[in-house]
Image (cartoon, rainbow, N blue to C red; front, top):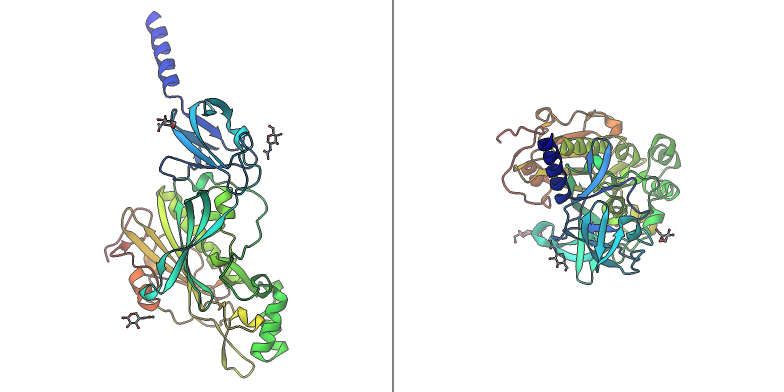
Length: 405
Ligand SMILES: *[C@@H]1O[C@H](CO)[C@@H](O)[C@H](O)[C@H]1NC(C)=O
Ligand SMILES: *[C@@H]1O[C@H](CO)[C@@H](O)[C@H](O)[C@H]1NC(C)=O
Ligand SMILES: *[C@@H]1O[C@H](CO)[C@@H](O)[C@H](O)[C@H]1NC(C)=O
């Protein structure tokens, strides 16, 4: 008996010694969570334990709390370093707080940091970062955007899908509006994306009201929507999800495709990442300019910027994703045709290998959902030279296997 008691006592001591901070995100978090970063300035993300989404931090470790654009409720400062003292408590300058007291006064405000590098063929285009200002000279990047300033279009975006955390992601109602940033566009992005101006543009470009009314038809999902490149739902926290709502993270995608095979592709990549339980780097971009036949059956390039009289903001002919498992050196490219109006199987820009991919199980051949095919990254790069060079990789065919190429 005494032995048992000693054992129980010992276990309790051990438990107390390893007294992590554990926060249930649905009960212990404030209304507007601050960004929480570890000492490497990596975002601290929840994990799903059973049915509960929790954030766990080791006792004694320091976490940086930041409220970009507002302040931490209890301290009225934009950021603070808090030390976990166990349970749900932290200290800041020797004062003890619960996380609930350390919420932001407003939702964390995302922003753009311009000119973080070069990209595109021969490095002639510019990389910009979307994320959060953490400190005067520290910017947390959640999405990188390779932007072509001449045609005012995004060539591709780059983000990391956190497979070990995505099941614990925050699901909140409501979406923020899209933000323009400054210095990217010479046309009104909010206007060119309205169905009304798209219909008027098609009348002008295709030369027929009757034809235009079959091309743009809201009831049939036939209009250009702001197609997220790095998708909202690939991010774990509400702040990171909200940070995807910038026009430079979107391309004009037919809603039937955006809500069809493009969405199915997004679901499939998240399922893949979740099954692998690790990070996947995802590049998402466009290529080419969509052409539609006018009333005389001549092909016409579609630039939404022509609404405002400028040949900018092209509707891409295709949008693509490169899914790269950097840890195991495996990758693959998936390409979707941005044209639900086609009536026969289109030519592909690289040889289709979808049948080799176990994880691509959606209805890729449906024309009205955006005909979709799969290629090696090398083959896509031969057709789209600004696809980033990721070196030699094996094929990402399933969560576990990789065929040698
Ligand atoms: C946390 O921060 C405090 C105060 O700056 C420092 O003394 C301590 O060593 C830090 N702890 C760790 C684990 O880095
Ligand atoms: C800030 O703290 C006060 C006092 O605890 C609380 O009443 C208020 O709701 C908090 N504000 C936000 C935005 O969380
Ligand atoms: C890139 O550089 C190569 C070699 O200088 C040149 O041949 C090619 O035309 C350039 N391409 C672009 C798009 O600038």
